Image (tube, rainbow, N blue to C red):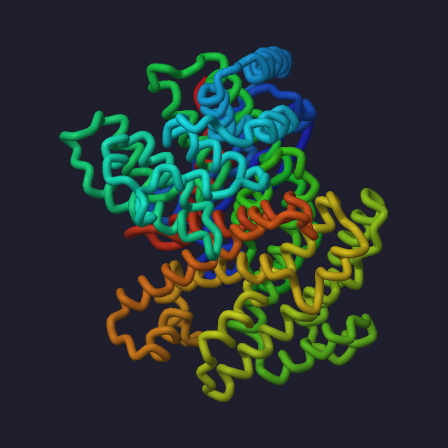
Length: 590
């Protein structure tokens, strides 16, 4: 039996709960796993506004050691809460709101908004930020490049219409950016960040990206202060528009205090808030673990992946706002189910069994389980019950009857798994187009986004419900393409070693007569860049059919895919381990 993520839970008023884990080598769809051999360490938490009966003492995998020991909760010590931070957070929020609403200088206001968002506290001031950005439509003619670009980026990422023509006054009569702008490094970097919100057909922003990238890369260390050089390097590595919110908050909080012009009040609020939200995430993990343990799926299907921690990582990337706690918990359940079904199709199920399973899912009738082998009956029942439970919860909370929508996404995904099985059985090499279209489904994109749309329950109308399936919304497809392509870039070698269907890299190389894999990977990166421009179209369109909340979710899914799969010498698996540890088990020192 493969090693499993084992999360042992104990909850009581005196002892709290302990989560222990070890890792399993496996394939990923929406998520992946770690091959690291692990030991454990203990992290203490602090008092927050969460239920006092849940006191978390967490055991988290580290890279030390060469085996998979598990910490026994009976040998663990629970460190008591020391500080009640709720009142202090409320005071700091009040003062921050006053500062935000009384700042009159546009540049100062925009800088304050960006700082708050990067620190991860912007969600507490959503209404104020929305109102301010709605009023900051356009600056004076003499406004500098830095402020113009920052205004553009903040408004557009908020879903407010912003015309890229605001940058034409920084261009010469030939339609090129004025070369002297290269001396304004802060302005250049601000324009660079804004260019990544460009959409298809916005040539001004495409030129801006090329112009700024070229000049920023030419800046030598001797020309810049260490602080500015570091900002440029980090921006070139990963633009702000593509960063995962909670990871960016952790990174920026740790850096912000070293800035000479930092606001101590914001820093204190960010630290307290980050740790409080981390405590919320630990409580959510406890709930997910209870459900997964009670489901008992992997105890019966020993070949299946058992990784709620990594499932939860994706949900936090996709839904970082604390108010979406219920949504994260339910989404983690669906991703956990995807992994087990993926393992049935990829590694365990004989072809004839897969045919029976697909037909049973298509009919979505419990009577169909009678013809299934025992291991498939268990999986079928778990999926059937979980889907019904989620449908019931949405009906209770939002008054929406959504089971036909949820059922359709699972049927589509299972049919796509079957298509892959047919390809493998017949030795068929699909076209790149067919591979991506099918791979978006098997990656769980449509399933996840449709579930999230209803779990959030914001802006749901008869019109957009009728436009949700057959076909799925275009931005669902685009986000899924980015996920699928990043998955291939991050895991293609492992999947090739397993004998899976050729990835997008190999298919692109074959169709375009490319022999160098590095060139093939670069071309896939270009496809991802084009997909981002398509996804950004949803930020440009007025009279949107779907609410900004689900559009933002699609962007967050793409961000999470890039952050998780874009790694250097580390494998995908170690990348996931590092993010899990960083987000859920390493608090910020107060």
